[in-house]
Each structure stands twice: as structure tokens, then as C-alpha cells.
Image (cartoon, rainbow, N blue to C red; front, side):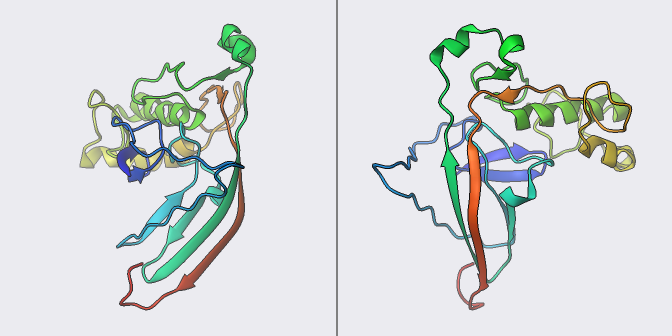
Length: 205
């Protein structure tokens, strides 16, 4: 697990393209290897997020891919990932025509790989800068964007609903207009089941 700064707070991620360091663990699960299994313990309440390798946890992640693990509890999530294989010739088609980006076609300032979620995160960062002249301290900024001081947090709170809401291009409703392309390598992620149960208090959660 490698540390990753996200707009939701500090995270630890595995099998991701985003952290600065490269993971030495190669995680594969297919018809040859059979179903994979990842088991780990946490020592405080924590949110667990499921997402593609190039994605990051963000405010607009669907609820089905986010789960809170409570202390003295056990959570088992079974999920299925269907990878989308694109024709290599797609790389020769302009981004504007294919309307998607590959992870290496990165135009973002603060993330190592392109993804829709990373793009929305940086769009939200820009909106905070435009309105409040600073950004939330959880935001991944590469150290080049001013962080809001305590007295500036009122601005972030006053516009929090706008910052969280994504609106269609040219829409008159409130929200942020991000115009982020989808990922060309988007995965079909399906949560098959979730089971949570209480465990003995003296056991590791």
C-alpha cells in the first residue's frame, strides 16, 4: 500500500497508477489464476474505496464503491472487474474525436495518470481557487497552490454545495462545469456482495 493524497483526505492505495512510487506488487486475476483475494486489517475506522488503477477516491464516487469499516467489525466485499480492451489503432484517433483519454495522455497538473476522477478533482481545485483564492488542505496540489487558512475556510463552506455538484456543460444550474473526458480504459466494476459483521473487541478489526 502506498500513500496517496486525495480530496477526501490521506489514503493508502494498492495497484494504482497514481502514487509517485511504483508498486512492486503485480495483481492479476483472470481465468488462469482464478479469483484473487486481498485481506488486510485496519486499526481505526476507515473508508474503503473500489476504483480502477488510474482513478482516485473523490467526492462524486458512487456510493456502491465506498464502504465504512467500523472498529471491531469485519467487512467482506466480493466484486467483479471486466476490463475493456481497446484497439491499438484508437491511439491514432484525436482525443477530441474519440472523446476519451488513456492514462498516459495526461494533461493534469497534480496527478501522475489521467482519469475522469482525477480530472474532476483538479477541476474542483480550480473552482476553489477561482472563488476562494485558495484550496482545501486535503487537495493534492504538488505544493504550488495556496492552501486556505483558517479564516478562509468560511468561503469553502459557503460554496461547498457548488463545489460538490457537477453540472452539464452550458447548464444554468449551480455546480462546476468540468468538461472532463472519460477514460479510454474504463473498467466495468460490479459489486457482487457486501457482508459486515461484528467481531470480538479484543480482535484486530
